[in-house]
Each structure stands twice: as structure tokens, then as C-alpha cells.
Length: 156
Image 1 (tube, one colour):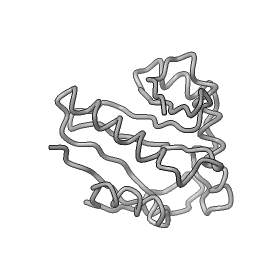
Image 2 (tube, helix red, strand yellow; image 1 turned 120 degrees about the horizontal axis):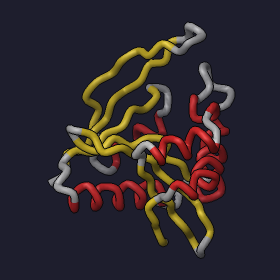
Image 3 (tube, helix red, strand yellow; image 1 turned 60 degrees about the vertical axis):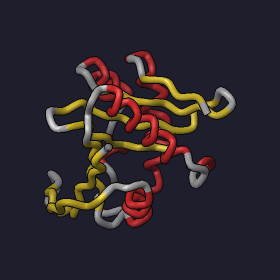
Image 4 (cartoon, one colour; image 1 turned 180 degrees about the horizontal axis):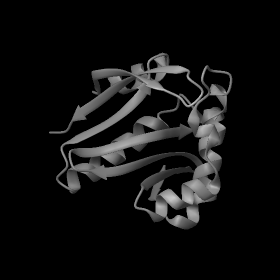
């Protein structure tokens, strides 16, 4: 598996991978806000300093993760693996690469937020050392409540 850091010109690819992975949440209440993003919004985020990693299998893009460097560590989001490649360790490989990048930058904490109802995602993160440390209820513009857990991994 090959991995590359994103460039602004990768915005259409990042968006495509994300939409393919997040379409399964379209009927959730509320649907994932990832589905509201556009190529332009992804490009704008990359221009403004967002970073990302794209995973390739046999030169075909199969997954990605977006992240930001913050004061207290790296915060990742929109971890995406296309449906036909899920369950093959791609998400874990992306996070392993992200953690290696963090260590290289002397960053000791990697964190994310996850929908409370996304049991598979929570289990995945826990299986590689992430721990829940907070939960909160977010309010979407349409008044719908969304319970989210915060998870982090302290790197050694």
C-alpha cells in the first residue's frame, strides 16, 4: 500500500473517496455532514492548512483521512475507505501513518470525534489504542441532537 500527503489539487479525489465512504450514513438522523461537503469546500480547507493522507492499492485510491495540526496534537476526521475495500486494514494503515507523522513532528496526542451510534468506528479506534475521554451533544441547525464521543491516543 502506498500513501501520499494531500495537495490542493487532490480535492476532487479526497471528496470522491469521502462521499463513497460516507454514503452509508445518508439515512442516519441526522445524515453525516460529510455528505454536505463539496469539492470546493475540501479545496478551501486544504488551502487553509488542512492536511490529509491518501491510501493507494495497486495505484488505485482506496481511502483517505483528513487532519489538522492543533496546539494539543493532531485532530483527524472524515477517515474514509471505499466500501469495497473496507475491512482490509486500510483505515488502520492510514492511522498508523498519521501516528508516525505525529511522532516525527514530536506530537504526542492524536484525537477524533465519533458519532456515539457509530459502534464499528469506535471499536476500530479502541482496537488500536484510542480511548474515549469525553462525550457531548451537538445541535445541528435543524434542531436535531447528535451525541458524539471524543477519543484520543497518547503516543509513546
